[in-house]
Amino acid sequence: MGQFGVAVLGVLLCFVLSFHNVLAIENEKLSSQDFDYGDALGKAILFFVGQRSGKLLASQRVKWRGDSALSDGKPDNVSWLVGQVNLVGGYYDAGDNVKFGWPMAFTVSLLSWAAIEYQTELSFANQLGYLCSEIRWGADFILQAHTSPTTLYTQVGDGNSDHQCWERPEDMDTPRTLYKITPDSPGTEAAADAAAALSAASIVFKPVDSNYSSRLLSQSESLFEFADKYRGSYKDSCPFYCSFSGYQDELLWAATWLYKASGDNMYLTYVTSNQGWSQAVSEFSWDNKFAGAQTLLAKEFYGGQKDLSKFKTDIESFVCALMPGSSSVQIKTTPGGLLYIRDSSNLQYVTSSSMVLFLYSKTLNAADMGGVQCGSVHFSASQIRAFAKSQVDYILGNNPMKMSYMAGFGSKYPLQVHHRGASIPSIKAHPAKVGCNDGHSIYYSSSKPNPNTHVGAIVGGPDSNDQFKDLRSDYSHSEPTTYMNAAFVGSVAALLAPNESKSESLSLQ
Image (cartoon, rainbow, N blue to C red; front, side):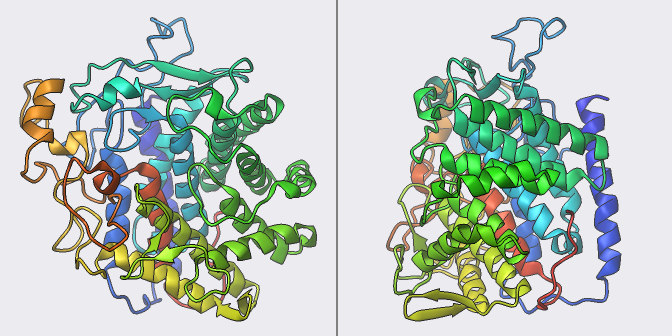
């Protein structure tokens, strides 16, 4: 079956599952809301359609995009008919035209986690099928990139030349250089994150496409073996997205997802025997997965695995590091109440932190636990959830600028999103090629709004004083990324709960 047929099948299967769940909760009512979270969720997922690379579907919902990068992979193998390298597809990482495998894997992991934990909520909003389609688009690329048990392609496109060029992906003529990890040039972080992504996705698809799910899990196991056997940090073989936190967090993250997906105690033993790797951290990001693994394993702790107590302790340290008023708070907030970790693309940390806070508050409720003790201060699960909600609300418009940081949401939002495709007229409206120099001089430097609204794109966000200058050139504040949106999907989905009971939502697991 071709890529088109596979993608359509995945959507149809997930829509069937979505319809089943809607029937199960059709009499439920949404809790009171400050924003239209269903609209925000749908737009956050739609963003990924605009980031797609490759041959687009006939039913493409983002009409200003067209086919692009249809020869990706050929630099390593001129003919796909006799070779194994076909790297068409996947997602452009941000506002550029490069495909970075490591953050793409993190994106797929987060989207899958949202689908697993908030299946009912997503179904209620009629978004589960769309989300499954985006998960599959990313997972398919990871499968293609894993061309042998000990080879994983981690980047398509020369980042330096791409970043010096302002072209639509449909016109792109910069080198599509390939980068890969092998036993001689390892990158444990990238391989382990790819393993985590495929494991998480395998859980999503298990009820609706068991053959695809089995394939995802099998490749995940192979990737984990590669990552663990040939240990070496990706910082030594990366041109971009280099590792700063080491690879132990990714190995724990991957082993945890493999345990959840396979039920094989071998992976649980791996986690428990290496729990000394776990660290108390104050961020959850493409580079640092400790808080994600700790959140998953704390749930297992409350489920009876009492030898995982260190992970429970460490995730509660994460909560205490973020909650305002905590005796051990480490992360400051802006005057307007936004978590502020780093100036560059700060909202990536806000969305990921919020996702973790929502998930851990859900775990505490399910386990009938009162909350988290942070020194002399106690935070209930509802207080943790309320703070996470405040971060979502800030992004959607409850902030000093009174603007949404999601393009296309609300009445005031960024108009000069740092994004090549969005800032140049669509190839359908302007078929003539727009080259590098013209792209820079005519469109990048323009003071006008982007001709295409990249609906759902969450930008890097305001500065430490809650100020935001809507400038295309200010990439650290105006550029969107896939993983930023993926974490937001997992955050805003939590606010769509049909009820506020302590019972778990129907699980895909």
